[in-house]
Amino acid sequence: MRRAKRWVSIILSLALCMFMGFTQAVAQAAPEGKAVNVDFTNFEIQNTDHKKANEIYHTSAFLLSMDWDASSYGINLHEGDYFDVTLPDTFKFPNGVTAQDFDLLDPNGNVVAKAHVTPGADENGGTVRATFTKTVENKYNVKGTMYLVAKFNTKKSCP
Image (tube, rainbow, N blue to C red; front, side, top):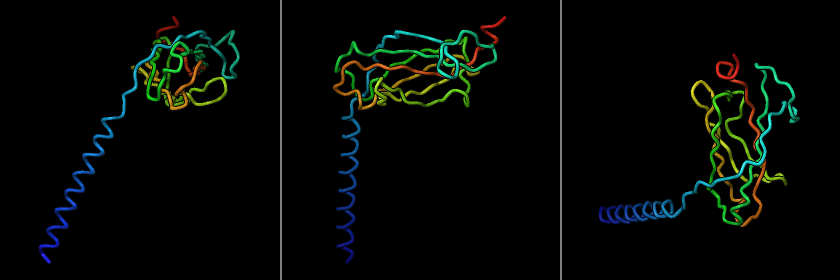
């Protein structure tokens, strides 16, 4: 009986070691995404109804609308590839007003990337990282519009 338990323990230990080795090999085989450069073709400040703003009060929330275009990559975009956007510190991106995580859609409404906002110090400026989804694989003309809710940094942009 003792011998049988010992053999079962040895076999289970070997199986566990093989399983751990396999999962590490799979994790290492997954390619890292690469940074890509997208073109920004239009930038606009809009009101919260997605209409071009002619006037905004310094305390109001508004939308930053940015059209981006990764078409220059042809079919060479892959899941995990990403682009970063540096947000100027003349704008605030307050938690609770600005979505920290959101989808980027192509003109047909397909989710082509997942975006994450990392606000800077005191929620002024920061960065957005947009990571492409599997939807971009083997697709031409990958592009869309990014919308961010923002406020003015009154300490920086207003006298």
